[in-house]
Amino acid sequence: MKIDYQDYGSVACITLRAFLTEGRRLDCAVDAAALSAEVVVTSTGVLLRTATITGRTPAAMRSYKAVIRSVKR
Image 1 (cartoon, rainbow, N blue to C red):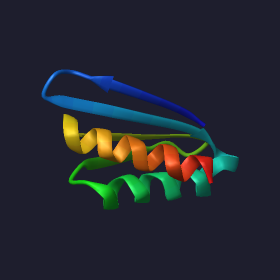
Image 2: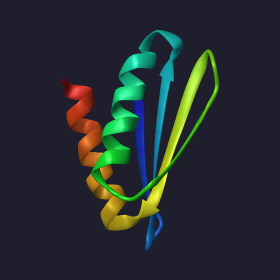
Image 3: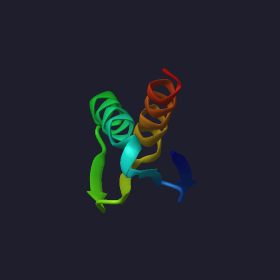
């Protein structure tokens, strides 16, 4: 799974990319991010899944930390 964090000033974006076999891990990370802060989550793809999490920078940073904790488990 690849995780990319981009800060654009007042808005930040987290992009998670995972192959089909890591689908559950991606879903768990996206759920943790959505529950930790007020962010918008969009997901696309079947074989190569991509989830994009956007929101205000402090909320996105909280979500990023939740994603990292979830992936390390």
